[in-house]
Image 1: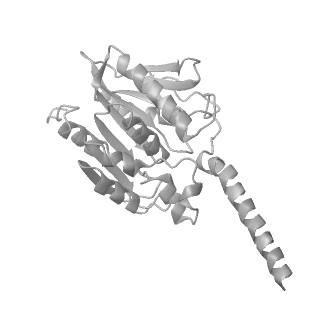
Image 2: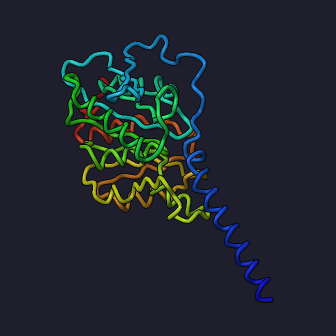
Image 3: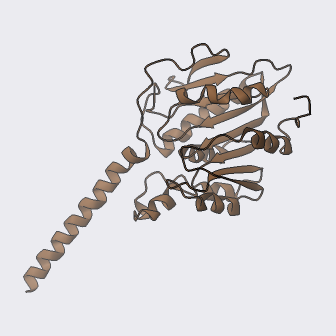
Length: 272
């Protein structure tokens, strides 16, 4: 009987080790699905799109969207998209922002689209730090008015950037308190998460304005994640939206009002 119990214990141990190894090796394929690039150029016919290669080895692709006209140095948004998206999908979306006189830098993740490398918390953070340094050095950009905007996984990229560089405000849309927290809700032990993207920990030390946008019907990253982020950030606002995870429209009017309250933009007048 003792021998049978020993054999069963060994088999259970082997199964557990195999399960841990599977979760460890497969999790980045789930977190970073890397969609295929579009068959056509989404920037065709859109003026003011400048395609860049950043980094010492030009490994990171980024698209700089400049405003139609700006008499002085303009504010800028550095944007991080969701894990199933590419920068190609966001060019037209930011036309509204560019008409406010705001530049936008769309930064691609390593291993996504035409960027080289492999995605991870470390490599994504490094790519965004390089992109920020490029953006802040541009003479036409106000380095004291750079906004971090991240959607879903992009909230993790932007929070990691905020822990390393000066961002005047943060906009986090449909993001999480941490990837480890999302994984924990699925039964995955937190200690197994290779790329934790702990947004809550970053916001606990962030003293500038934060706007949180989240769909109340979000079943991918539930609404309570943004509630936790609101509690963590000293100066935060949470805007609940009647949508899920991938069907939320951008609330441009509220975004403009938030940036006006934060001192980044001038308030709109009746003539605007």
